[in-house]
Image (cartoon, rainbow, N blue to C red; front, side, top):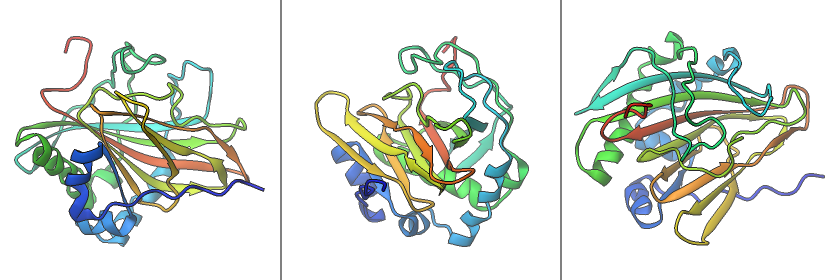
Length: 247
């Protein structure tokens, strides 16, 4: 018998900015995300099939084979969502002790995702939130499609452990959760002992983080049935430019 899952604390869309300002994290229910973007549930549902065709992440330094992903980068300025040429994903060791300092090149997010009308709306909504909290300015955005599977018996959504991403805002959108146990989300204040734990269960439930104020992680997953996996879309927003070895 598996342990009961702790429910996520849901924030009303109208309270999203205030909640982030107050505690540094918030969770939108699927209906709340749709209302806030705005987006229809069927528009988001069209995106889900693309997670079935993610290439393997060949950079895992723990020797695992449990992560598949794609990546894309954007600049969002004044409501305009502009894709930039494919570029390496890079983080300093300060924020990623396992994979920091490494230029990681991933296959781009496919046209069947980025050409959907809901895609720039989704990315643009979080950019508006960033500007509401930090002042109007360009936002340098990275989008990551992740599938964590249980082929080897265990999958690690955050092999680097509890961490910050070195950006201003992070959105973790649950796309699918099938045939697994585990995958509990944990959020902690960077400057104190306060913390929160819960599990994202329903597709399109979205965790939003002020990355300057909190650290986060997700616990490993294990299979309850064949082909168990956890799919997420992770969006990061940074002022001033993308992270890079020369930034």
